[in-house]
Image 1 (cartoon, helix red, strand yellow):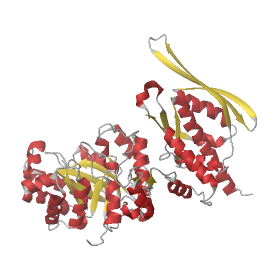
Image 2 (cartoon, one colour):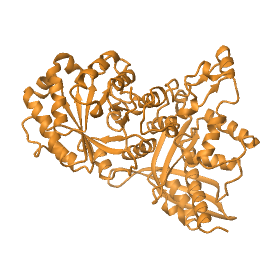
Image 3 (cartoon, one colour):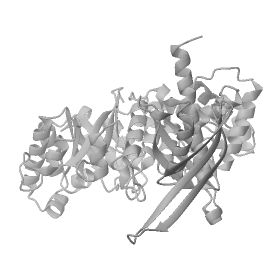
Image 4 (cartoon, rainbow, N blue to C red):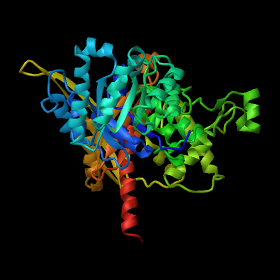
Length: 536
């Protein structure tokens, strides 16, 4: 194939949200959109404005993206309405998005049964909608729903839908294998025929994974000429999911030699992106996931481990570090060292890898991960752990004890109320301080009491906000004695965001550890900024 640029379109935040059990918050969407932007994805589909309050709020306060184009999703005008008077199109046009994806029918069966429309009317719906929207935004994409089924049943009509959208001004015409029933050789053959009607430079592919072929079908479509590939991180999606971008991207870049917005440097963030999504969803990462799974480059003792020790190419198709992963020889105590050294470089800790403190930290991280800690999505906690191991963290405050009390009581109005009170004893610059604060829950009360003690000495903490809080049970078999992991995401008015983690069998203690790290990290960064502005 030639080296034409392949454009990546991520639909995790909309199509991925169709996954059973997945429910993104506005904060989740914003954080993931920024991660995808940093990765180098070309388009981030944010959701369907007008479909639910979460998507409405997300587009009302969209994240600032520097590379990716934020895209709003909707559908062509309704049967019997004009494009100008269609409420769905109007919501899209008022969403603020400069790129809009319109889904429309391209299977005659769906047009007649699902839409209850005449075939010619569906072509007019496509034409009117694309024309109307294209005149008002930067780009329009047309998602040809059920295209491959439609092509098999009535190729002339399916192609007519594509030609109509393209002629009306669609920048991309996307061929959708909506029910995931296509096989790679079918997809490649049909795409080859489509390129005679719409140029490959304007064609995209969107495959579902119902036959476990979505990745292979997407790559086959690229071979046949499409230049945009749609998918989701970790293959999220309804039923069996979508084409998995964490497999598609390295296959395109490393195996097929394609140029994408994700360069070889950014590709090293792939494992991180995958794990961040899993942490956001409070779910365990898939260990055997290609490229990004913890076991993707794990070798058990024996013949494989012996061969890999001599030359990794014996059983590894790429170097794990190319995608941000690392090799594990499961009988070796060296697994993970290279990954931790790479994290050191990311946070600006450059020193001799032979330093004995590195091995101490590696063992500490391993021990903590065995206890339930994870540092994917908790970058601030990892940096604090590393700097403490090297003696580079000042003790800003020392909490000597804390107490949290929940009181549940009926009111005179016949309702009930819960009052949470937290008491903190902390040492700050040699002075013992005790504060009491109330909150709308244990974490809020604890946070309020800590800030009440610290803010008079450290006013920078007035700028800190806790924007997300997640709890995950790690040992459900232990019932109420389970080990619990708490992840907290914080931010400040400058747009900085950081994640912290705490683990305990007590949810309040786990929350305290994550909260303590969040406050300490903010003070550490404030001290570093002060030194930069006022060097000694």
